Length: 190
Image (tube, rainbow, N blue to C red):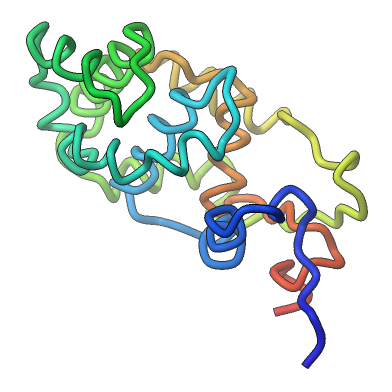
């Protein structure tokens, strides 16, 4: 068996390779994991994704497994606890945004994580969009669909959720397949 061809962004670090090979672009309909992706993509704004990936387990621990109901109940003491946690990005605005987003989640979806998943997947008609990208330069950073999702989430009260953040979450959650056509993970090659 020959060497597998991967999307160029995923090489060079075993964590990236594992993420690319097992998770990125794989359809994910778990509402809790989708909420996690939104929070982590917001935390990533202005940073490299590998910085967040390396801290993901710390984030899961610090944010109660990304349980929206628990996070929605966080108070100023929790903000201070998180700001002092060296295992996560200690940006106060991003931390407060995560808490705000949990409150917006609970306000609009209660504890129904499936409803949240259905809401997000509705922007792609319930099925992944399969793109045919030949080069990394062909991959967009946002689309009309990610702008529509961003606007809808903002309308619900979410923050740190622009079109680029939404598109990154859509790629990660497999709502769009942006693996290059030469990558072994592209839909056509599976």
